[in-house]
Amino acid sequence: LNVQVERFEAEAGQVVLQANWSLLDAEGRVAGQRKARFSQPCEAGDTAAVAAAHSAALAAFSATLAADIRALPRR
Image (cartoon, rainbow, N blue to C red; front, side, top):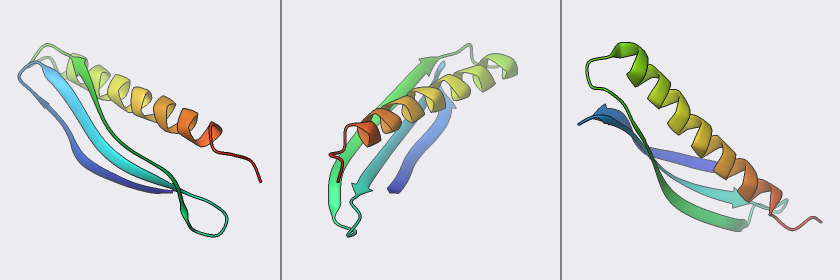
């Protein structure tokens, strides 16, 4: 697994997480790749809301990555 987070920040009333990842097979070959963007609305200036939006964006990223891993062919 190789993950590159390009952006994970709050601005203009939303949190944005942009990431690329590659899934590798047992021999180290790329078995799948994806570039994705996750965004969650939040009220700017509300620290708790911004933290919750960061958490929700990270949860969406994690769920998508887990689904991609589960979809890999089994050896």
